Length: 555
Image (tube, rainbow, N blue to C red; front, top):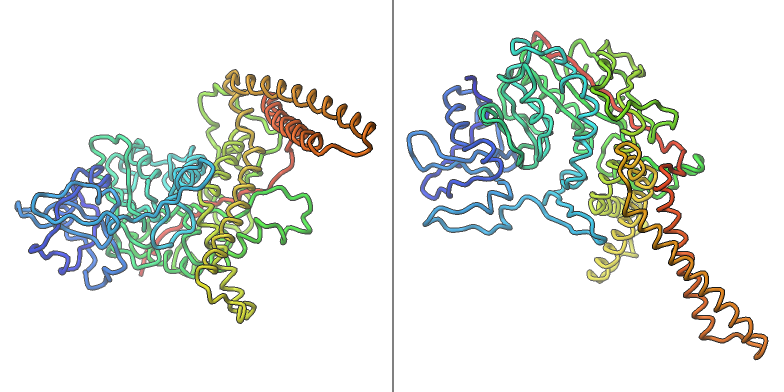
């Protein structure tokens, strides 16, 4: 069986005198042991020479022992957080978990899920479940009718499917690889997932999976740890927020370098757009959410419109026969007159996407891949994605704004000498931006109105909302009656004594607040029960495009 290409480690990493214990992370469990991959790699000798790599930056997870029964262990500069939790062999000095952990975890207020971030802030978003689910959801919808790859949509037999596939930026949970590895026709394909974050795949997998899948921890903008002509297919999906604009040229050149001449490179990407209610387009530039993203993306040199950047970048990198789906634009939420398929539809239409065609700038796709009920789910997932990364967004925005003020000279003499005071101010600014992000996400969720979707599509009786509405109606009647009684006593007191009573005024304010609070909550619950949303305006659109090109036949 042909081996998956895995780079060799520097000879200094092979010192067996003080070798750490053999450990098993979740990645190790996925691959059974790292030793099989090491043996196959040694047997096939498909590495890039080690002198081309700086191990201080390039990281590879190779867990396990060498062949021949020795106790040699291969240790990467960084290891998965789960590796730190593994049991050490007897006689080996244990290491601090904090030294091995790759993530820092932030627990936001309000009962939200934890937000794990890389200790080195190479990526703007958190690695939380909500953040990862967004890309998995959109990626699955875009590729639902193409068996996961538009470049090989007709590869229903093993002689047509690529034999060696590289997924660049596969993420901590490699959704596409895990789905594609079991597709008909791809049973013999070897997969390599590469990402700067350690990969942790925990779902049950077929028995043959570990022989065909490997994961490598490596930064995308750096030289890829593979020889030329190592793969038959390379894929990138939604990596723009992790790259500076100038990094795209390097990434495309490296992707084409490791491809067999004439084989395919597939890129699935989207433009950035902050979905929100826009009552007055003339004041868009002053909206806090728009300002937030403008500051963050400009500070990190991230191009918010990669779909206009990629074609020229691919051509300059040497790619040939550029094709694309055209711009797939999804209104969020979809128009209310969109015709949705019935809940018991056996399958999607056979052509949910336009077939690939020669790339033409500005060409729009006529895809009908998504319907109203699906866009509600996507909108809700979009809100969860940004809410789950609120701290990363807030820190990036505050840092960008402070750097901009410092460069423009507006901070100069106003810089505080008191370090603790400066830290308090920064924390206050971060919390203020987090509040903006969460308020924005809450508004998007209310417009998505998933409760109505679940009720109408699945026919579930919303027992909780029914009980909640009854309780709120009772609370509203009670507070309204109490308010009328207090108003009567307050008017009588003023008639008798000629001045208001302080205690009655306080009680009136309390009852009035309770009444208004119950009214607001009841309006939200009734909106859900009526299976309709009061928000019918379009918040904007999400633009996607799939590019497929070929590596040059002659280098």
